[in-house]
Image (cartoon, rainbow, N blue to C red; front, side, top):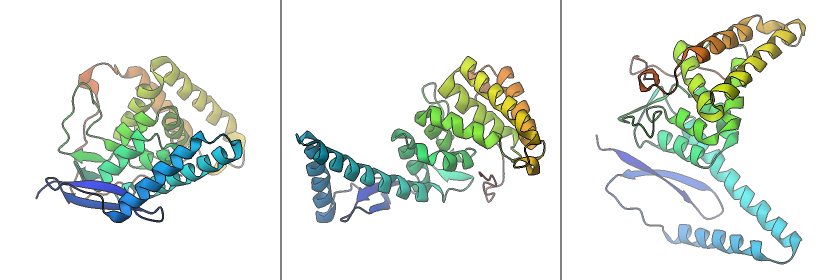
Length: 245
């Protein structure tokens, strides 16, 4: 089966269209795409307007354009199974969400953190290349570390692989000391709220998650390539069962 690449283009009216083409095929924008790209360029140039109100209006329009793109990319990424092909629409959508620092996609990416990109060899420059959601979260930065910590503080039962990948996201965004401090602070917070009736239904699971995570975080030598996360063996038909509140 030939690899395919995903193309994300604006259609007239601001709707993002996502299509896949054979890798060797060169995509050329049609009249509708060229027209909309010209509209984007013209809109961006209005940022030079001397009137503050005009500039504010342009900023609002550009923000809406970005929001449209992010929402459509999230729809594509949400359809990812436990494994995706290198260059598939799902893996490419995750890659773009990371490059564009789409913090609104953090919860979705955390949900798919174990998703493995088949045919993606790791390298010293890209230690998480086999995990497109992890790469995207690392590119997003601090909001991603917050999303991972929030997920651990909820009533979830993570696998060891999910915990390990989460640890690497926090380390890659926060560093060793700040990352450990973040986790310890979250652990203290869940201990304090145990008597709060709003969280009573969660039981001891959040505390157990964060305790395991703190221990794991302390035990990993993050700079040792031999300890980098590797895809977990599983059936090809297995879906990602994780849930994110």
